[in-house]
Every structure is written in C-alpha cells, then in structure tokens.
Amino acid sequence: MRTPLFQRIKRWAPGSAAAVLLSSFLLAACGENSPSVLNTAGPVAQDESSVFWVILVIAVIVFVLVEGALVYSIFHFRERPGMEGVAPKQIHGNTRLEMLWTIAPMIILFIVLFFTIRGLFQVAPDAEPKSANTVTVEVDAHQWWWGFYYPKYNIETADTLHVPANTDIHVDLYSNNVIHSFWVPALFGKTDVIPGHNNTKWFSADSSAVGKEYLGLCAEYCGTQHGNMRFSVHVDSADQFQSWVTQQQQAAAKPANGSLAAQGQKIFQAQCTTCHGIVGVDINSPSAVQDYAQACDDPNAKCRVGPNLTHFGSRSLIAGGVLTNNKESCDPNDPNLLKDCNLAQWLNDPQGVKPGNDMQIGSLSQNQIKSLVAYLEGLQ
Ligand code: CUA
Image (cartoon, rainbow, N blue to C red):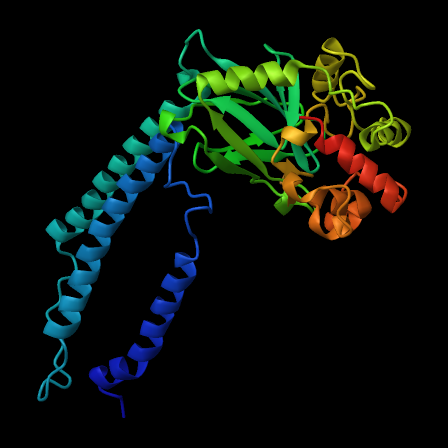
C-alpha cells in the first residue's frame, strides 16, 4: 500500500529542515573577511555582480512560477476517494500551450543573454577607460606566487599589490610556466594567465576601499600548491600610493656595520642570490629589475626563480600568501623565534611549510635564521 502524501512529507520534513539549517550555518561561516564576488569594491566587480543579480532575479521568478504550478497541480488534481482509475483530462497537442512554453523560455533566455553580453563588453579589455592617470602593472605568475612590476616607476614587488583608488589599473598578465588565473573576487573576475598568450585586463578600486586589503587567488589549477598561490591588493589614496612608490624606488636599506642585520645580508649574498634579487645588493637598480621582470615573459630567458626582496619588510604576505609577514613577532632575540615568527618558520623549513616550492636551501643554523630575519624584516 502507498503511504499517503502527508505522512511522507512528515517523515522527510525534519531531515530536510535540518539540512537547510546546517547549510545556512556553513554559509554563515563565510564572514566579512572571506572574499566574495558580491562584496564589490570597484566598478568591474560591480558590473559582474549585477549580471549575477539579474540572472538570480529571473531564475527566482521562473522557480516560483514553475514550482507554484507544480505544487498547485499536485494538491488540486490529486486522486480523491472514488476517483480510482479515472484518467485526468488530456491536453496533449494543445498548440497554444506548446507555443507558450516554447516562446516564453526563449524570451527569458534572450533577456539573460542581453545582460550577459552587456556585462562582457563592460569589463572587456577594450572597455578600459582611456585616461591619463592609468597605472600599468605587469603581473608575473610563478609556481606558486605572483610578482608585480610597475614599468612606469620601475619597481617590483611580490605577494602584495599596491594600487591607488579611483585610478584605472591596466594589468598585463605573463607566465613562462603553466596556465594560472588572476582573480580578486572583490575587484574583478578571473582572467587566465597563459604562457605565450599575454592577456590584459583592467580594474579600479572605489575610494571607499582606501586602507583595505583584498584577497587575490589563483583560479586555475597549476600544481600542488595552487591553493597557496594567493596575494593581496592593498588600496591606497593617491598620496599614500605616491609615497609607497617613492619608498619602493629606493635601493635596499643598508644595515649598520657589525649589526645582526649586516650578518644577515652576508648570508643573503652567500646563499640566496641565485634566486632572489635585492636592489643595491645583488642587482643594480633600476634596469636590472626591469630585465628581470621582462625575462619572466620569455620562456627561453633566464628569469629569477624567487621574488625580488628589496622591500620585503613592507609586505604583508610571505611565500605566495601561505604565511602572513607577522614582523611584530619577529624580534631576533625572541627565544621562540622559530615558532612565533612566520619568516623564521619559512626559512627554517620551506618545504615543510609549502611542499614542492622552488626554495631549496640547505638547512640554516638558528643563528643564520636570526640574522636573516633581522636583515629581511628591516628592508622596509
Ligand atoms: Cu597558479 Cu593555480
């Protein structure tokens, strides 16, 4: 015998309600700090999220109409006592209905198509505003970290991209290894970074974003540490950006003679220069830096494997965002330096922190790590 409909509903309802509740708790965990394409901080992301909202509204209307018709039919035309074996009214071959449910979805899909295409054109490279105060950034995708080079200012940084608010940022995307995808959910959608095919994109950040830092991600599987290929975008006011640029244009700070940091610089020069550049130490400013950035675009040229560390101490992330640069916990005299200071942790065991990365250094002694921390965190 078939269980009556209402009893079946009774049986499933508690489980379904629990599942809905649980999922809303899980989604609630996505707090303010997790990146969202709906928490937009610039016009490109806004255009993209408005496509989402248009499609969502249309989908909700269609859902309510279709499910409403379904639920109405289930209850209104259900089998009642004494109706066993009576066939419902047949409407097969009703031309008007057939036309209606062919044409209505067509119209709806054309509306969706219109907004989608409009959105594509709004954010396309061709739509980049032609203004004088554009800042160009060359983005070099490595396995697994991001390098940022500003040709106009001849400066290079990694892991943290600084941009001025209310300014169009033109981005050139380069990779000499595998395909990556450049994405800052709050600012712009994903664009692939393809070896041999240099994509461009543009975005800008609202003035309300000044002082905030937005998480960026690699959105194309690119190897074991794809999930740890993060970066951040720090939005500055025009003045803040200018002073950041001026600071980044300086050669690296020279540590005082005989200091711990001076020992750190010696260790750097002996062990790290094959992969890392520091302006004023092992590379000359500024053209060497420029060659370095452009070499990464050419698969045959020698491109330094590791980030430019000239102003390492001013960055907020380490090693492709796998760690934060918590320099306040990096007092070289801290007996627990290896535990407290993320840079020390990284220098002590880079393969343990981020297995498979290119940092292959022989093991450093505690004292060497201490000096390197003192040196690198001092590079403001
Ligand atoms: Cu780079 Cu995924």
